[in-house]
Length: 87
Image 1 (cartoon, one colour):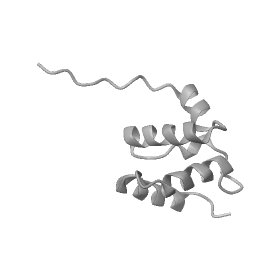
Image 2: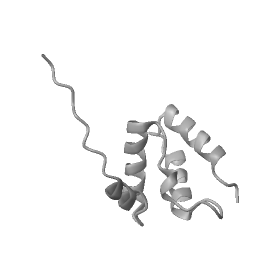
Image 3: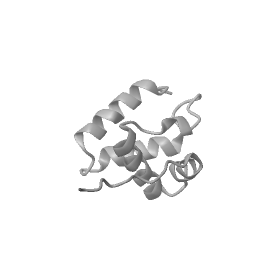
């Protein structure tokens, strides 16, 4: 019998702290991990009511500029951008 690898329990507070961190590398890794787990990005953690939050925008740009970013993740970014305010 083979065991499936268990994913760590979801902790919202830890996610929010890491995803909104000032550390761009940490934010990017959290976004990648979140996308791989839920097939979307945690943009809801940012206040985007008056335009895209600068940390979110920087993370999106980092993902777009990374040649390692998968096609499905790039499609996820496109979908995200359609939902966010354009200002």
